[in-house]
Length: 124
Image: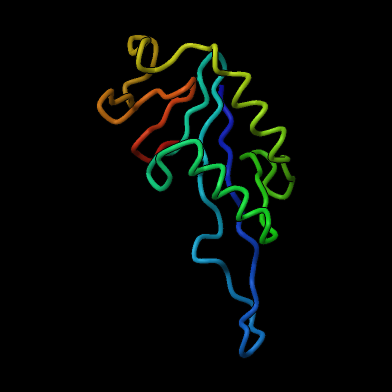
């Protein structure tokens, strides 16, 4: 069982006409928290924890939020999100336990850094 987390970008209004527009990405998959594993970041856009932190901070400063797949309108505070990520650092890593993950796992596309996994492919 796992939970996907998303960065939700706010709607914006055009500076010229006032028409409601969307950010170029209305949501972005941050990654997945699976029971018993490191947090798995989606590394297709941002490749490091620091890059994700900066993207999340900028989005939230602009009116965006973090949500999970079960409650798109609900907000997960950045503090709660990062606490969850840190809390999973001692869990097993995909890199050292490839026999325990599903057939979707591609070892060459995953790397483990400081207790989190970064996956270079889209997953859910």
